[in-house]
Every structure is written in structure tokens, then in C-alpha cells.
Amino acid sequence: MNVINICDCRDERLSMYTECNETQLFHYYEPHGGVFVAETPMVIRRALDKGYEPISFFVEDKVWEMGEMRELVESCGVPDVPVFVAPWKEMREIIGYNLTRGALAAFKRKIPVPAVELLARVKKVVVLEEVLNPTNVGAIYRSAAALGADAVLITNVSADPLYRRAARVSVGTVFSLPFTYFEKGADYMSLLKSAGFTTVSLALRDDAVPVYDPAIKAHDKLAVIFGNEANGIKPETLAASDYTAIIPMFLGVDSLNVAAASAVTFYELFSK
Image (cartoon, rainbow, N blue to C red; front, side, top):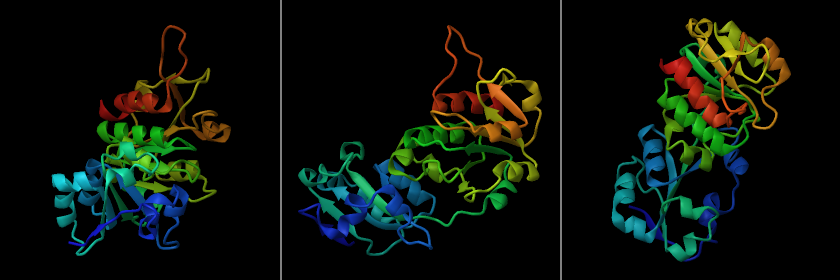
């Protein structure tokens, strides 16, 4: 086992963890895919279980001594993968370290399949249109995985599901539920319709129907669209949607956070 003791987190071998932002990691090996960093033993385990190839591990010394991370490294299938071990006083300098439970790992990204290929083999899909907050993306993903979605499709402006915070909030479900990206500038509404999907946009409009409307649920292939946290779904997307849906509410409340709204929607349309 290739354990490397670290006494200074400015060590250049740790640059993926300490110097690269999410965009730099995404393009790390361009054009052959990129890198993502997973946090917490649970998320790391789920990435390994789904066949993601580790580049290195970065673990607090006391966490390493506990044994769980040692077990994960031994079973990862990559001989001599570097395991950087450092004391807490060094690792605490990493932004957000207190949320990592003492363990990080860098992985190679898989090359995503084209959207048209993914759509050909699923029936219940989630579309994220410019959802920018990684926490929201992770929470949406967790609900989608729990409540029956088959896949997630993402516009190029949205936060990436493999960003650290998104993967952590999803508790690793981002590795279980297939996802891919629409090409930049793609007419994704036409793509969805040509693949046989009925499109449903969640938006506050006078012509919106309740999300539990039987007419929506009667369709075999559904694509449910969620928009930007501030501006909602684009007007052209709404105009091209087969349905606009709302979640009926009370006491003068007109909307929910996009992550909360997604959970209600998935329960009504995917799991019942």
C-alpha cells in the first residue's frame, strides 16, 4: 500500500485537493474527461462501488487508523494508488474540511453518454435547466434516486452533480442514477419530444395544472423540468412544454425551494 505521510498541505502533490476549483477539476484531462473529488467515507465508498477509478486518497491520520478507509483503499482495485495521510492541524486548512469526515478521494470522471443514447433506454427523467446551487442539485438527485427517476439530464449552465457539495448532499446517489449533459446550444425540448417524452415544467402560471393531474400521470415517458433558483424555467422552454404544473399550497405560500419541490413532484409522478 502506497501510504505517503504529509506534514504540509501546501505539498504540490495535493494540488487536486487544495488548489483546483471545480471548473479546473472538470477540465483536468481535457479532452479525455476530468476529475472530481469525493468527500466522506460513505460517498467515496459509493463512487468505488459504481466503478469510478481513484487517482488518490487524502485522509486524516486518526481516520486512517480507524480502518474503514484502509479497507476501501485495499478493495479499490488500483495497486499502489497514493494515499496521502496528514494530521488534523494540516487538513483543517482545506476549505470545508469539517464536512469531509476526515476523508477525500480524487477520481477520474467517466465519459458521459450522449443524451439521445441515454433517453433511448429510460422512461422517467429529470431535466435541470440552469440549476446553479450544488446543494440543490445534490438534494434533487437524492430525491430522484429515492422516488423512482431513471436518469438526470443537465444543461451546460447547471451545477455539476459531481461537484463536492452536490455529491456529498446526495449521499453518493449521483453515482447510482445515470446522468448526462445536453450539448451546448442544443434544442433539448425537441430532443426530448423526438425521443417520445411528454414534457412537464414546474412553474407558477395561471394555466398550470396540479402536479398530480391524472392526465400527466397517464403518460408512459415523462421528462420533468426544473429551472433556475431565481428566474425559473426559460420562457421558450415553458412555451414548448406539454404541461406546466404546480404544487397546490396553503396559507399564502406560493412556492417551495426547487429541491423540496422536486421531492413532492417525484413522489406524485414517479413513485405512485
